[in-house]
Image 1: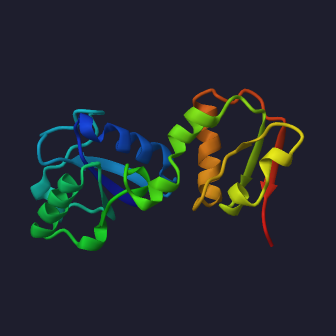
Image 2 (image 1 turned 90 degrees about the vertical axis):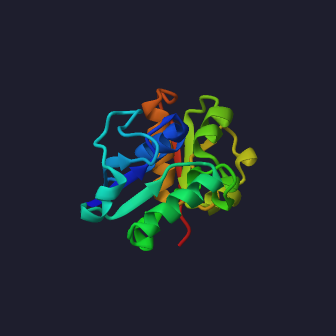
Length: 179
């Protein structure tokens, strides 16, 4: 299991942290968090590590949890200056407001704004979003897929909808796979 540390312990990091926590795969474990401003995890009371402890800890990645580009740059530089391997520092681009990845889709707002209780769901790779002409289907469907998403994220969208009690019953599932 890969061990992850979240860099960001205050209210400004809450949206990114929630998205990471929900959409992270089962092969990853969040072992705690660090912050340059706070001396504890002000959000969830997770394990807290001081920044000067990072070189002594065993972890695979540090995820930078800020939306401000200037803050991300400061976080990155601070970590590199203190000897953290650049390959271990990641920015979760899918959850950043102005990233190319996010401009294609925003999983949470897509569900909030577009799902209206359709009991029929479409799953598949990203081409399921563009190649399957939904309006030609005789009954209403909701696409649990978006540009650039693989099957993991399609399933994660469904799990999110189920966890939020948006889906009560599923009648038909279209699983669009191209071979």
